[in-house]
Amino acid sequence: LVSLGVISASRAAITSAVKKGKSVMIVVGGAAEALEAVPGTETRLVLGKRKGFVRLALSLGADLVPVYCFGENELFSQVINPEGSRLRKLQEWGKKTFGFSIPIFYGRGVFNHDVGMMPRRVPLTTVVGKPLGAPHIPEPTDKDVDKWHGAYLDALKAVFEQHKELAGVKENALRILGLDDEIDAASPEEEEKKTKKGKEEKESKKDS
Image (cartoon, rainbow, N blue to C red; front, side, top):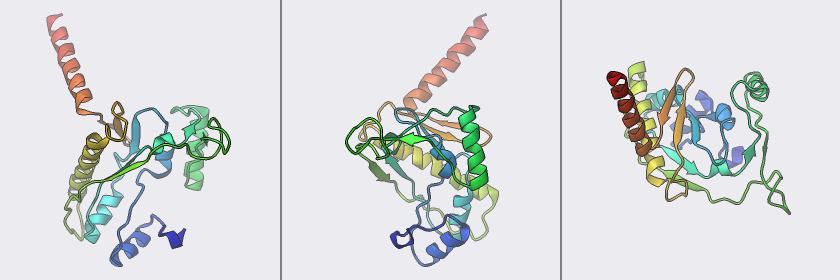
């Protein structure tokens, strides 16, 4: 894996690579996000409270570039594991104990398209957004990190919305999950519907 450019996601390894002039791509959601991958549903990214990569980028003077790959969730199916289920609790235990999650997944077989361990034949479309232009801040404050973390989430959402129809996921929505709360990053149309619904409910309460 090292020969292919794969490195540890540790601060030391990333710092060393950046100082050597290399670009680093991080799968920020990691093990937690693997348990949220379900084909044919909204895209759920574990990013709401993950800010370490932003702090590190600012301190090193490395820019932040939003990247999204459409189609990844369609490669494999996953045994349903809702929050609170026995399976999910077991998977969460495994993640905390061993540092990686254990999603129970399946794809297609070599001679069939129903069940197997090979990925399904679906198109993958990777979109690389524009660099955010993040500054070099040797010792970033929490305020600096929050500002650029928010800018990164906005840019990632823009990449998703701009290219999702071309990638064939027009009706799909992007939801960014956090540890304490949930940031709904649905499409503008869905946001408008929610706002309209909220206004109607308020007017209804006033009338009553």
